[in-house]
Structures are given as C-alpha cells and as structure tokens.
Amino acid sequence: MSRKAFLIGDPVAHSKSPLLHGLWLQELAIAGSYTAIAVKAPDLPRFFDRLREGEFVGGNVTIPHKEAALALCDAVDPAARTIGAVNTLVLQESRILGRNTDLVGFLHNLDEKAAGWDAGLETAIVLGAGGAARAVVAGLRERGVGTIAIFNRSLEKAQALVAGFGGDEVSAHPYAALADLAPAARLLVNTTAVGMGGSRFPHLPLDRLPADAVVTDIVYTPLVTPLLAEARDRGLHIVDGLGMLLYQAVPGFEAWFGKRPQVTGDLRDTVLAALEG
Ligand code: ATR
Image 1: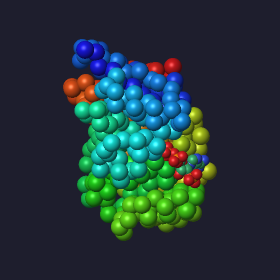
Image 2: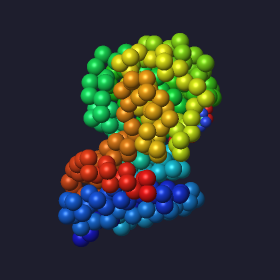
Image 3: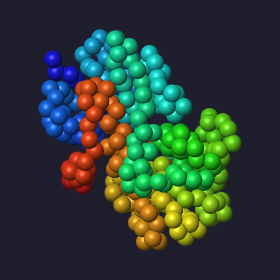
C-alpha cells in the first residue's frame, strides 16, 4: 500500500518540502507520496480527525498552525512541549503524536557546517523571540550552553520567552545592549525574518564579536543573507539556514516511510536551485 504524507499550512504553495520528500521517495524507491494541502485555521480540527481515520501516515505542519496543532495532538514529544509548537505529526495506532524537529534540524546543520561549535561554548546570542527562537534556545540548552542572551525589538516578548524557559541561562535584552554582550559570544543566531528577500537589520555590531565566532541564520532566501555576508566579510565562520530545512525533514520521513534519508550535497543543490528558480 502506498503511504501518504502531507504538509498542511496556509499558504503552502511556496514550500519546497514536497520537492525534498519527493526526491527522497524516488531515491529510496518507496511507494509513497507527500503533498501540500492548504488548510485554513477553522478546518484544522477536522483535518486532524481525517488523519486519525488512517488516510495518511502523518505529515508536517507549517505557518500558521504550529501552535494550534500542538493542542490537537493526542501526545507530544518533550521538544515540542518545551518549544510550544509542533512541525511533525506521526500517526500511531489512530493516535496523533506531535513532534518538533526544528531543534534537531538546527543542531545538525551547525554540527555539519561548524563542527565543534558547541565545545566549551559559554555564551550565545539569539536574535528574535518567536517560535523559531524557542526551538533554537531549546537546542542550545540541550547542548549545555551556559548563557543564552535573547535580543528582540519587543523586550516584553523576549521576557515572555525567558519566563517560559525558566532557569538562569536564558536572558532578555534590547538590541541597544548587543555591543556590550557581543565580545563574550562565540555564536550568533538570527531567528527573525530579517534577511528574507535581502532585508537588513539597521545596524548590528558584528565587529564586537570574537574572531572565532560562528554566525548562522535560519533564513535561507537568499542563501547568504546580508547578515551572513557581512559576517563573512569580517572573517567570521558563517552557516546558512538551508541545512536546517533539510535536516528537520529527516525524522519525519523516517517515521512515515521507515527509512532514514540522507542529506547530500546533490540534494542541497537541487533544493537550492528550486528556491532560486
Ligand atoms: P517565528 O515563529 O517564525 O519565529 P514570530 O513568532 O512571528 O515568527 O516571531 C518573529 C520574530 O521576528 C519576532 O521576534 C520579531 O520581533 P518582535 O517580537 O519585536 O516583533 C522578529 N522580527 C520580525 N521582523 C523584525 C524586524 N524588522 N526587525 C527585528 N525583528 C523582527
């Protein structure tokens, strides 16, 4: 029987996930499908019922449903609970398990492109305080980063994120304090949408980061965002966000179709060409 998986969101037409999963299905010669389905917010509960009835083996959830989907799951994994959002659904005996694989996607991408990035890493800077920031912070905590400084336009939103995590590691700051904290940070992560389509932060004091700092962006359109371009010009190690997109897809595919797919250079090139096309 051909297994069916989906991506639900609104809108979904722009997503490269169907291409990515389609390439893996083809490469691994699996009789299955992965289809993008536009689902409006009021229709989400009905879609979950449809999933429970067994038409699909599971799928991905994207904007704007990641938080609402968590509440509709029958069980959620610890990462999804911490982050407060699910991006992957797996049907298990008519029950829907919600997972969040953005965290492993983020970590694997850094592990691959900046091996050893977390060795002795004491301080990291995270720009933004939305859902993506929560996944990144959860990942950094998992790796034992001692100080995670969140910078956000809205300080209240950053403070709410900090309160959600508890503990002393995570703290909230206005952008004006970035220059003071930068010299201690060997990792800077952008989790905001700034960079998309070439948009820029007003000014970030990248010159204050240590010479061995890693700068990474979750935005991958363009692949080298203005932030990454500036960091590269300053001689810092940069890691683009495409790998996070590719690696977050691995656990879902494996759960739905039973084989672990590989993230290869060819796969990266094909997805990148589609993004640029
Ligand atoms: P996501 O779930 O993708 O992280 P989100 O929850 O809407 O999306 O969060 C978007 C984040 O990007 C927020 O931290 C937002 O900052 P504010 O809370 O101050 O709005 C940040 N962001 C979006 N546009 C920005 C901009 N032009 N400059 C700085 N931060 C921006």
